Length: 107
Image 1 (spheres, rainbow, N blue to C red):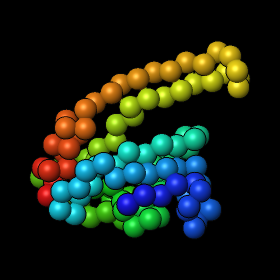
Image 2 (tube, rainbow, N blue to C red):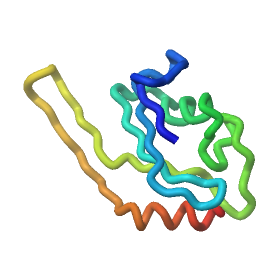
Image 3 (cartoon, rainbow, N blue to C red):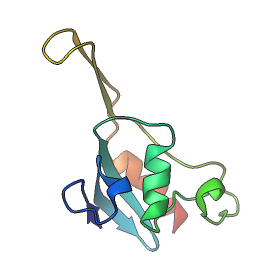
Image 4 (cartoon, rainbow, N blue to C red):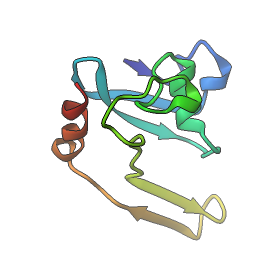
């Protein structure tokens, strides 16, 4: 699964780039890049492509027994006061192997 602002057929998906990193059964670990963050953007765009987050019943996913909540991890945020200066980058990396454990446990 790959979608991007350049290839998305639906205009509402522009600004969200999605790449599958790992798949286990019906669950996938995806890397998502957004140009600008809007409330629920990732959740809404995944659901619009018929890939709602696991347990995200607000956006049409079924609830998985014995699994609480859904998983979103923000690896990096770039804050800019203006286009050229005052750029702040905040990172919170997790390894793909660590994140893939969540996917394997869902399948």
